[in-house]
Amino acid sequence: MVKKNDQLVVTIEDIGTNGEGIGKHEGYTLFIKDTTIGDKVLVKVMKAGKSYGYARLVSIIEPSPYRVKPRCPIADKCGGCQIMHMDYSKQLEYKEDKVRNCLERIGGFKNIPMEPIYGMDEPYYFRNKSQFPVGRDKDGKIQIGFYAARTHSIIDTNHCYISAEVNIPIIKFLRTFIDKYNIPPYDEKNHTGLLRNILTRVGYSSGEVMVCLVLNGKDIPHKKALVDGLRKIPGMKCICLNVNTSKTNAILGDEIIKVWGEPYITDSIGPIKYRISPLSFFQVNPIQTEKLYSIALDYAKLNGDEVVWDLYCGIGTISLFLAQRAKQVFGVEIIPQAIEDARTNAKINNINNAKFYVGAAEEVLPRKYKEDNIKADVIVVDPPRKGCDESLLQTILEMEPDRIVYVSCDPATLSRDLKYLCAGGYELKKVRAVDQFGHSAHVETICLMSRK
Ligand code: SAH
Image (cartoon, rainbow, N blue to C red; front, side, top):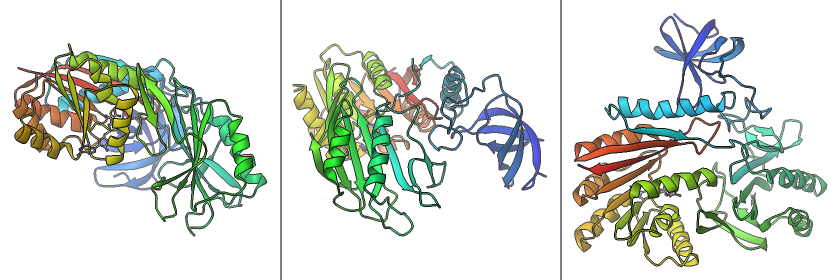
């Protein structure tokens, strides 16, 4: 029997959904953070349940051939990158296997038509959006950085190896600004202090930069010095405040106060321009997103006569990309603000064949189909983690589109939904994983289904 505090030698055989290593001791499964497939390790059991437990890495007895020294010196402490200690090509293999395994196990698919995973050419400095919480350590020293895994203690750093490099001078400057003018950081326990978070966004093709300071209040002192310092950073286009005075884990509040510049930045994916305000959702890895959308366009196989539905459309990113080659695109999204952004984005690109509806996809699509008898040649879905509502899948089957393109951030719910669609008369034609989040355990997948 494995018990708490036992020290055991384990060989890591698999990686769990959160990037942790999985090994067995006499048939008993242990989850061990910071280990990777092929490592032989000494571990200490922290928690032992009936059929599985959690252990902490004590030492590496024999490193896996896939183990590398993370480029980021705080990778093991920071909650951001779970698998930076794994060689990047092995990360890709692991992600591709994860998709294949889900499709086999949950979807019941065999001989899956998988195309090779689309990895990043440069898996560093790729994120266009970063959030740096601000606080103090127990000695009262200012801390700016990232939360440690599963906690709210801040790991202090100026340098994130997966975020835009312009963050380095931004955080360096803000550190001196906070020090010089004694700007009080937010104290989560007592709900006191002012500066909670630093949000930055960068347009990778435009070079435009946004800094948004999230405050437990409506104003920050010494704005002139703040603006003077930030303006010197190349690309600075938008400096603003976000008001979040509630006692909450949510990073952003609803109110934005402009301090300097424009209230948004602009970026493009392929030929399409997108306006990004501090609160809008935008894909965080623009280079891989362009690859993903190009695959979507390829799978949709449009020749200009098609009616296309883009369900879960966010700010219309995929819709506008597809509108270039379709007769008409309809986008559906549940957040009204995102639909406003989608309409603005259509306008600034002079796209007139995209129409957007606010509402739940599982309500809007059946209504439009039954009441207005609107048809669909191609349906694209890009749902959140939990996948599509079964009633939505049912409507899709009734509408009988020639092709369905499914973009997914969770291979398990993807597999469940594809199984349903296949039982309803569709055939899985192509599957491709795309790495949007290097060094994390997440994987994005895109699939093409055709009507039999
Ligand atoms: N396709 C977009 C966004 C995908 S993220 C892009 O590539 O940028 C998933 C989106 O689904 C989010 O914007 C979320 O707000 C939206 N959403 C969640 N549940 C929904 C539902 N039931 N109906 C419609 N949209 C929903």
